[in-house]
Length: 413
Image (tube, rainbow, N blue to C red; front, side, top):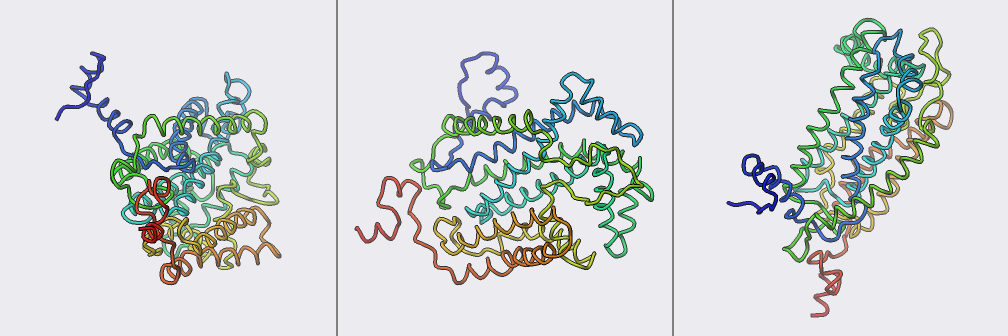
C-alpha cells in the first residue's frame, strides 16, 4: 500500500526507509475528527505542550541544582541570581507545575461533563487517571527539592502518612526516607525520581494518544461519528484552533511568570529548611488541597489515608458506576445540575484544604468529603436508573443541517 507522494526528495527518501512523515500525514490530514469540537477540547493538546515545557526547563535546572541538604537551598538561590536567565527558567518551571494541573483538571472535568469515560473509551480514561497520579508524585517530589521550610515539613508530613498502613507502613516510610528521618538520602531519592517520572509520563501519554485514536475523540453531543459528513481532518481545522488556544494560554502564563511569579507558592519556602522549627500551618501546594482536605476530614489516620487514595481510585471505576447510555450532559438535565454541584464541591474542598483543621472548617470538610463519594458511588448509579435523557440527534450534522433531535425529525416526517 503506497503512502502519500511527498514532493521533497529528502523527505521521500527518509520516509521510504522510516515512514515517520507518512505517519504524521495520516495523523494530521487523514485522521477524522468530529466537526463540532469546541474550545474545551484544546486542553488535551495544551497539557502536552506544558509537559514539554516542564521537561525542557527541568533538564536545564537539573544542570545547576545540587541535591544535598547543605547546598540545595543555596543552589536554587544561585540559579535565581547567577545563572543566565535562571530566574526565568525557575519561575517557568515552578509556575508551569501549577498551570499543568490547571489544564489537566479542566481536561478531566470536561471529560466528566461530556461522558468521555464511557464505552468504548474506558481504557483511555483510566490511562488519563494514571497520568494524573504520576503528575502528583512528580510534583510532590519537585516541591521538596528547593529544601525550604515548607519543602522539608511537607515531605515529613506526607511521607509519614504511609506509616498508617498496617504491616508495611513503617517499611515504606523508611524506604522513602532512606533512613529514619527526612534527610540527605530522602532528597537524593526525590531528585532522582523527580527527574525520571516525567519521562514515564511521556510514555503513558503516548499510550493515551494511541487509545484516543483507536475510537477517535468524543464530542459535545456524545454521539458516534457517522461517516464523512460528521468529521473533518484534524489539520488545518483543529491545529488552527489549538494554536489560538495556545496563544491565549501563553499570554496568561507569561503574565503570571513576569508579574506574579510567587502568587501560587508559599512564602515559607524562601526560608531554609530547619528541622527544629515547625511552621505554624503546614500545607501542600494548592493542587493537592482537595485531597488534603479529605485526608484531614477523617479523624482516624488510617481511614483518612484510605479516603484520600480512594478519592482518586474511584475515578478508575467511574465508567462502570455511570451506566447511562447517554454520554453528554447536554442531554441529561439532572446529571448537568449535579455535575455543577460536584464542581462547586471540589472548589470548596480546595479552599478548606488550605485552612486550619479546626472549628467550622473540619465540619465543612467532612460534609464535602461525604458528598464527593456520594456523587460517584450513589448519585451516578442512581441517575443511570431514574433519569430520563432528552432525545439524541441522529448525527452530528443534524442539529445544524437538520431539524434538531431525532424526536423532532420524526414529528416532522
